[in-house]
Image (tube, rainbow, N blue to C red):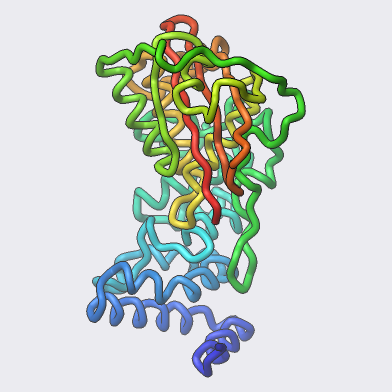
Length: 323
């Protein structure tokens, strides 16, 4: 049901009265936060926040995240409608336009990495990433997908279009594979392995994650539904898009979360102290990736095993969701 208030706000937007809309957003969010808490306030004001982030001039849209409106009156990194409000903003303007305007560091970082995913090279002129994640795409990051598919496509009135998370996307190029017996799996321990498991679990909290000592099919055997599967090897560059999208299956997170989380996971797999590009690139060069099809895969699904031949360790991630 469209209310009188909805009509009023849309009329203000059509007239370009963005300052009044920002005031309405801040007042509504602050009042709701006081009465019902932050989570409810974020949900109630998200549609208006989306409208401002999408269509307002950047000088005003960035003020959604500024604390100068008072307690409870500003959006944080978790505020979302069809997607995070900061991601909506990042899809609408270049880093050149946004960099002088954005204040809060967490929002600023996520916007920067969204722009990197969209193809901008921020390695010159932008402040370094605090963890060392590069501010431009490595060749293997760019190879597997088109620019337009890397982040949700947001719509002016609300909602978004996004590519489905599907790995494997089809049976093409795959064949019947007999997986090793799961009972033969030996699970390694140690701080590096455990940290990598934590990072991969955070990347896809709706999926199962395991680590084994052995090759990728052995890791897949721990999670696959049956020993005989339709599967095969693929370059890591073709698995990368699905791994980035894994973090953004829900609406609260964006693809920048996926990129940052995957760099952390790869660095840990490589035994590096942090996301050092040289160490991660070397791992990607030697990585062996195995994917397999599950008959009951949901609308969003991810079935992949990542093997590091140098360490003799493999990780598998497997799960699906109907959204």
